[in-house]
Structures are given as C-alpha cells and as structure tokens.
Length: 531
Image (tube, rainbow, N blue to C red; front, side, top):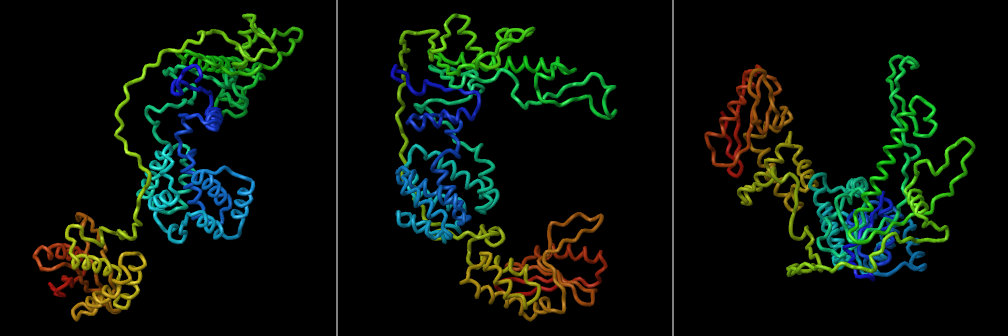
C-alpha cells in the first residue's frame, strides 16, 4: 500500500478454505477491508449472529451460551464497546442464572426493551424486522446487505415451511455455510480466495501466504486398487478391488504400479496449483513458505534424499534456492526479481453519479395493528366480493362442515375462535347464525342424533368418471334405505344449483339407495328447496 497499490489490486491466494479464514481474520482485526467467500457469508456477519443469538434465547430461554453470545454482541455491535473483565463477569452472571428474566431486564436497562412475551410470538419476518429496528442495526451501513439478505431468508423460509422458530434455527445451522451475499461492485478491498477459484483471473499484487502444501498423498487417503490375480481371493464372489491407505508399504505389493501412478498425479496436481498461484500477478508476487525439515542422511544402498521428488512446495522452493546458490540458513527473505519500485499508472474509470439514498432506519408498524392474518383465507374470505354479508356466509359455510349434530355448535365455534378463523367478538354472531340453520324447522332433522352425517364425502364408482363436486353434507337415515344430499348456497336460487346434486344423487342410486333426496339451503333468506 505504501508503494501506491490500491487494496482492490491485491489478492491473497490460499490452497484451502480454512487458511483463507485465518488470513481474513488476521487482516480484518487490523482494519483492512476484505472480500472473500467467508466475508460475504451470512454466518460471519456480526449483525446476523446477534439476531440468531436473540432468536435462540427467545426459542430456548435456558440456553446459557446464547445469552452470553447475545450480550457480547449487543455490547460490541450495537453499543460499540470492547469487552472488559467487569462486563465479562456480568455476562457470565446473567448467562448462568436460572431464569432468563435478568437477561431481558439487562437489555431493558441498556435501552432495548425486547418485550419478550409479545416478540416471541411474532412470525419469523416480523420478529427479524422488529429486532433490527429495536437495536438500530441499519446504522451499520457496511452490513446492511447482510441484514436484507437475512430478512429475505426469513421470508422465504416462512413461506415454504412456516414460522416455527425452532425449525428455522435447525435450518440455519444446516445451511448457514452456504448462504451469502453478492460481492459489492467497485469496493476497494483485498480479495481473499483459493488458488482453484483464481484460475483465469489476474491481480496487480498476489500474496501466497501458505506456499508449503504437500506434493504427496495426504495421510489417510485411500487407494482403490484393481487386483489382477483373482485366483487368490478368499471368496470367489468378492470383487477384484482392494481399498488400502496410501503408504510407501504399497511399493512392495501388487499395487505398487497403481500407487506410484497416484503419487505422480498428486505431485502434478500440486505443481499445477503452484503454477496457477505464481502466474496470477501482473506486477508483484509474494510467497510465504516455511523452512523445510532437515534431510536425513541416506543409509548405505539408498539414493540420496536430494534425488527423490520434493514432498512439499516448501522443499521444492528450498531446492531451487540451493541450486542457484542463494540459500542461507540465517536469511529469512529472498528477492528473486525486483521491479525497482515500479508501480503502474492508475487508470481510474470515470466515477458514476451516485443515485443511492442511504437507509438509516427500518420503520415498521406492528402487523397486528394494521393487518389481521388468518389461516384458510381462500376458504373463509370471498376475495371477489368483499361485502360483509358474503364474508359471513363463507365463514358459516366453513363452520357447517364441522358440525355433525346440533349439540356440537358451541364446540365448533370455540375451535374456530382458537384457530383464528373467527374473532372472540364474532363468536356470538356465529353461534346465532349456526343455530338458525341447525334449528330451522326443515333442517333440524338433518342435525339430530337420529341420523349419521358426512361432510364433503367423495364417491368412487367403477366405470364412472370421477366427480370433482362433493355435496356439503350427506345425511344417512337410520333405516339405511334413504340418503339426503344437502348444499348450502347464497341467494337467489338458480337452476344451476340443482344440477350437481342431481348428478351426485345418480351415483347413490347406482349404489343401491332407493330414496335419494336433495336439499338446497340458502343463507340470508333461510329458504329451503327440496327435490
């Protein structure tokens, strides 16, 4: 940076992802902006970790680890305070307490009233939105993208799987490593990636911090060897395959040739990775390796170690420096080529006019104050006609599906209130309307104990096309010879209302019922049509 290179021209290439994480942590702690697979991952965003920790406490208040993590992140992320021994002792006290109430009281004292009783009952999206606003997380402009991606995640999950908080946390633990945001365009930051992902790319400055990977098969890697001599198998039915760890002991077995081939392939793959890493820079390359282990003296009859293929990249680099007479046991750095401080002229693209407006707050009105959500919306509401009377008739129609006998009216009304289909204030009106139907002089018999009733029962008759239509109520008389089909309709009566019942009545006659009666009951007017 002191030589004039910009952060976005620098790339750090690692062989493994865990090495990339270590480098990212090292640079981030020292204040450098970075772009990496992990830096774009939701699981490494502190604002997201704070939300998840609060989720865990709301889901399992006894989770001491979640309490401690939430308190730590509130101090560090929201309040901008570094941990102190005094605060750490306070966190431990609150986290290990028998009740979670002191935890929420502590947040209230800090100015963040979570209102745990109400907040814990919100849906996933509303809960996330509420916590973001409560803790002012949108003020962390650099992490706004993570917040909006997490909001999208909660919305997508709730639409697909529901709002169960415990299930969402399980889903998060399983998927968090694969959830990320898109890389911000034009950001001046150091790129941290793997050598494999850097293929085909070029950077002004490349740093390879772990240039010491193995050029031999890793210990524990298995070799699936093909056995040529099948006569020596313990069982004739066994496949001619041997699965063994890749060690030099295989050189003294029939699998020696295959083992040697695997060793050569691994060596070439390691060299290929080294070639990719060392050919990515345009101007400067920095490779950081380790001093190879001392080579043991060769025993009598053995080839010198220097004649064997290098086992690691560090050993390969050491051999190069030795062969060019540059190696010195006391020297820590080597300059193989020097551009004498040359830095290419920066070509800055014309800066586009910014039309972005900063978002500093996510204003949200509690949904229960502006909207009433109810299950089975298509069943309960008539979206084509939002008239109050028609809405009531649809609710009544749905309730009658559950009422087998008049004595069950109170129980069904209570169930609908508990499920949110009907409010407590609407219960009395629902009971009145249900009693109108079940106690109607011409309908009371069909809700009495003397008959058996089924709601929307389907009949399948061989050789007959399946009917999509099902009557609202089918009543069987005790004699077993008579059945009554009932449909509930909205007035006025129309000829088309009779046709489905007549076709369905024909199916019952095919089943052997001699007396099949059809009844149409019209809401509002309480008119009954029997045919």
